[in-house]
Image (cartoon, rainbow, N blue to C red; front, side, top):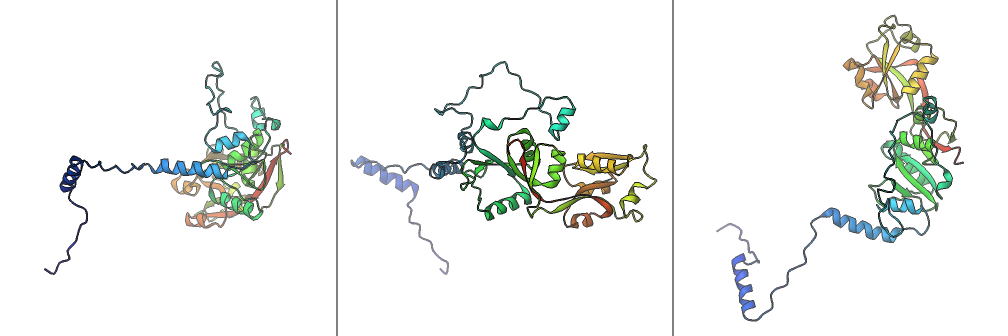
Length: 328
């Protein structure tokens, strides 16, 4: 009394099975089993995506190779059969060497291959795949009525429906520049800092538009706040602590630009090391004396007890539109 009661409409399992047996013994047809649902959400998602691809496939636009890549059928022939992996049984794969530019590769004596533009019938654009630069690039293209459509959000190939024959490839910013040099893409949007670092003033790279209006920052030297007597680049280079036995240790992700910068300043007692991220922590850890990194607002520097110095700016950077001279 005083407690709520609950009524279950489903009969107990034992009585349900007993009534089912009685109906079958009396001549009734057994109860049909409901269709089994696929418990895999990934398989259901793939089936929905296949239906979407069939409806959204353009009649014109990217080449067959690009469309096959977007649909996950790359390496297949006209009949849908996968290409044989034993087509060239004796071919040895060449060792992949990461270089900053083709000019540097020529200097090391390595053979340079530029892919022919005539080997395909489409224009390829490379844009950043992650980060704020990628978001700003997509917004810019959208405002220019060049909205990018990705058939599959997990793949890196896309298209611009308003420009038939245009392929869009999402790549890392460094790879956009490298593929411009190698001929894999024809035009790209990257930061000017990455163009200078990876492109290394390659003659085949042409800046079509040098101020897209986003991604503004600058590459600069930053030193610890505790260095009260070091407020300019001249103070840093004239510091008597640095010598050939004890060089100035600078950590940066821009090795080419840093080397050229200190060379132009006439400073030889410097040791450069590279890192991919969190450079601001290196001086506090004792791994470096100062850093050379991108700065936008300067908040990260201040929160890690670092400061910029006069004359320490290497270059100004923002988004630029770059093209291959060969493709143009």
